[in-house]
Amino acid sequence: MVKAIAGVLGGSSALLAEAAHSVAGTGNQGLLLISLRQSERPPDEAHPFGHGKERFFWVLLAAVFMFVAGRSSASSRASTGSFTAEARAVLSEDTAAIVGIAIAFVGGGLHQATGNARRTAARRL
Image 1 (cartoon, one colour):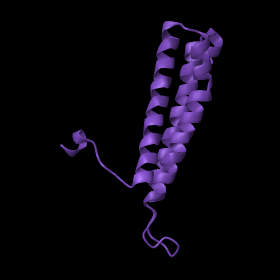
Image 2 (cartoon, rainbow, N blue to C red):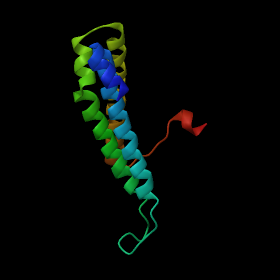
Image 3 (tube, rainbow, N blue to C red):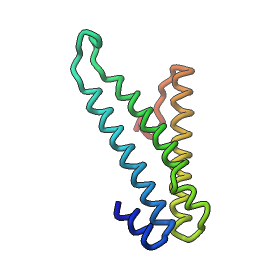
Image 4 (cartoon, rainbow, N blue to C red):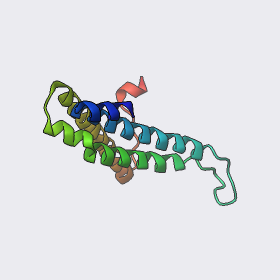
């Protein structure tokens, strides 16, 4: 909130971009918190094996939210419109986040298509 106010009062597109990025990050963390709480619910009649897989649904929503909020928010628009040093950093950060989401989406799709859940060599060590 402080970043948004400072951005408006000071006319800084970089601060407005950071404010939008903070809102997107907070929303993402909220969805991930929901995923943890929903997945820990005990089994019931409708879900005899528990709710553990519900975590994946909420994580998917968090990823979609970050993609939409991060790409279409004011942060990307402000960054591409004003190439100050601060704005370039925000644009780089947003781009890296979008690339990471795309890689995760492709990996999840490949896992669903092939059923192969291999881990990387680094994680096996």
